[in-house]
Image 1 (tube, rainbow, N blue to C red):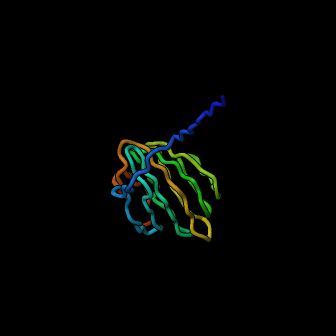
Image 2: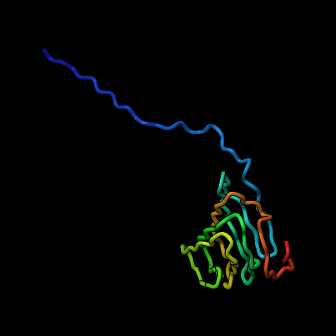
Length: 140
């Protein structure tokens, strides 16, 4: 007597969300130095795409409630972080600790594009202490 053996293959699958939650994603915001777009935001983190025009720089600033990771996508970044100054190119990154004075500059001739990942308990745009600013925004 021949016996047949039935085998079943079980595939582990995760259910996919039926909708994407965009309520925490902002439109692109223009600044004198360029622009930024919030790509994603969740509890304790925010991801931005930042574009800095050639020859422009952000204010020398500090944040009380967040740290930042910067990854260069294209262009060249001059980064001041505390007492250190470094140049970063495509696919290079740096970390800016919470409560550390820092500045981002585009010394190149093409737009600087980077991805910024913020981590912290409060990620509002008003958590900026400006020490120096090319656009007269100090004290904000």
